[in-house]
Image 1: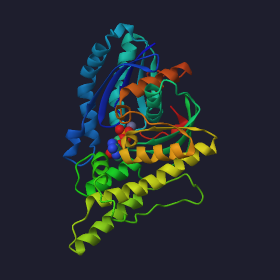
Image 2 (image 1 turned 135 degrees about the vertical axis):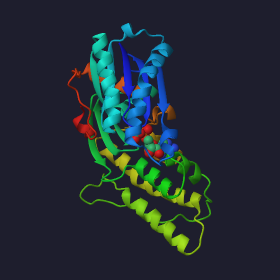
Image 3 (image 1 turned 45 degrees about the vertical axis):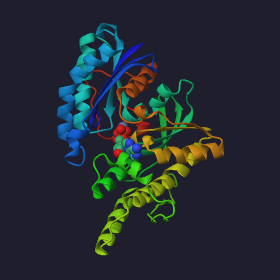
Image 4 (image 1 turned 90 degrees about the horizontal axis):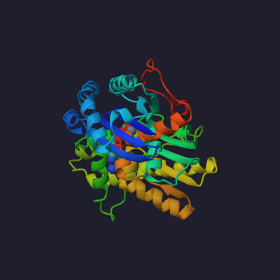
Length: 339
Ligand code: KG4
Ligand code: ZN
């Protein structure tokens, strides 16, 4: 089965051709990072317009790279939620027209089912059930994946996502957008002899698998003000390492707890923040200590891409999920509700 997949939920326009779920014949990604960097974050209206401009040409390119004629396509899969509403609509409108024109099914895909499915592409032997830590720019979720087309949210962030915390703090530090990658690099340069800064690690007694990252941003900003009042130049590598330690302390134990809660011995990781080298190391160390099978996708499958949407779309279609032309996009849609 040949699926044309489209992803436009945020600031990457991506089109892929995926065969039988896991074989990626092509995956083209056009990042808008440079356009948004001037503003220090994604400007939704600009993102939508850029998607509209790029999507046609990228589709031609994806088909050409895959060596596939559009008449050979069996279905079109597209991200319909969650994300920036205008950005989602740009991809969905194109996908609808393309599927209608070719007379083939349209498959609606939840963006996070896509992130989870990135693991199926990277690891041919991986099959549900397993546990999955989804860490992106917009969401932080401890999920259980009992079947290809199901996910249960066991815990999540009550406010900012981990990626959002990285990006907002990087911005407060005057680092270029997107800041996660830059903070990752800085943390590696911290002096191991200097003790870390005590940033908060909030807990919720009523929901032990929930996390909160918004307080981190305030703590970092207060720390910066304090330093500047004393005329001290902040030690950015130390600050970044301390920030990583707080985020990792909140994410890693809960990811393993969530797996235990559903008796899973396999833990997969998904989303843009899964590219973070310190988080990857902390997860790998703990997985080795606890004898848990850990799946960490390669970096090209962590960030937003259409290949993962094609893969998730394939499994959704196997489970009878198809959309008609009344399909809408949704800015917010809990992972457990699917599409
Ligand atoms: O999954 P993704 O590409 O987009 C969303 O669905 O949100 O994730 C983007 C997020 C951004 O917040 C970005 O700063 C973060 O992933 N990110 C990283 C790293 N690379 C990307 N965060 C920490 N360390 C990294 N190396
Ligand atoms: Zn994403």
